[in-house]
Image 1 (cartoon, rainbow, N blue to C red):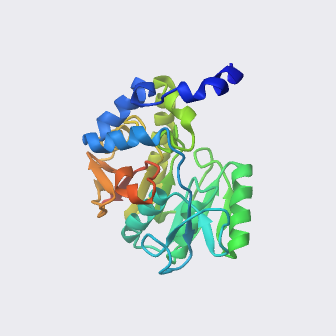
Image 2: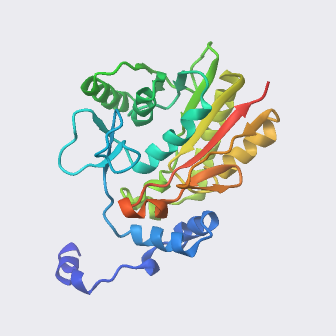
Length: 284
């Protein structure tokens, strides 16, 4: 079959008609603009750009003096991260009044590293040894100090309280479809419901560890409503002392209780992965 495909590949035309309906339904629910949706559908069939983020402002970088393209070589004081990921952290950092942050699903460490470049002291947790190993390799190369502990967040006792928590929750990774095209055809309601149950437990536990007046930032690299707005809806129903903060970014679209990266706004740079973020403040 593969040989036959290679012989006839020029006769195949890939377009919007080849995209599964469930994927398009997710898109249509979040992005009302036909222009944005069309751009997302086109992105399915295009090789994505890779980006590297600098530790410090550099006028030679093309976006906010921090982001450069990753071609063949990773620069010495740079680390790999999608431009959408950078936009999320760059936009929410102002909500953290306390410079000490608990990152509960940290590895392989991109968000923790970026926060550390803004002067935050990150306590990083993760349960995956292989991901922790990658994290440690990165911080060793970059010569930065981040405390990393192997710990299953949901199944471990944590006695400390925090003013600043970051939860980059496990999800379907639907927003990374440009790099992982298989996720487009793996949208499964049962699996998504399992994900949501885990996400809800993680948010619940994070809020219990949060001091009054503290901030929890919830992030997923997905745009399915189950893993994004649906999670925060359920949390707001359960926790009446939580307010949602407004994020100022022209690269995101507000939808109900959170914000989605608008990949079209990064068109000139080659697009971005899609992330959802909600900033939850626990009231006094």
